[in-house]
Length: 241
Ligand SMILES: [Zn+2]
Image 1: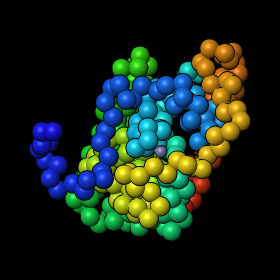
Image 2: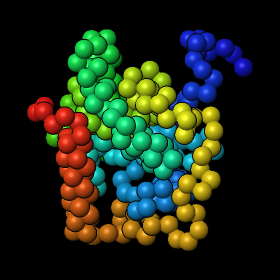
Image 3: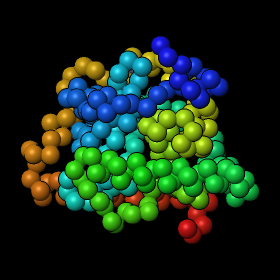
């Protein structure tokens, strides 16, 4: 195998980004995502990152849901082992610590702003290649507190896993922080979600629901997102943006 330039210093276990073919979600992927999240998944247009075994780690969600609602959180961390590990970092107060460092470390702040730009560009590209198109309502808006704060480490880790090492410095840091519970070189899927019984996937197709049903669900989802954001605001210091 030819040597890839520039990878000499990278630890061997760091993940690679998926190619176009690997990003395409299969029926099995959607079934697995529904089991991982405990709800029918909707508007998943790609798989952002995969376990070494092939199972999804990140559900790449359309920047506009089929209900029409703009959706800024593109890289949705789905693997229960990783989400639980990241929640432990959040509970330990890492977000406030990172936000403080962003205020004093100019180099880190610049790299984090670059991550914000990378996220926007990636989302635009996903919108373009999946036929969703531009979503002006969320132009310049990302997630997780970017570009100036840290409000959700799951968002940053989802971005890091999808974009590869170096794209998001704080997502990369969080990944290092969970190494005790999850590393990219191993499969942690066994027993991580229920594989018996029917997956919560009856309604996941864009086509089996009426527009009205979809709207109700999207609103429910938006309310849950808003609640989550308020909760994050509470733990992130709460100052105005
Ligand atoms: Zn696995």
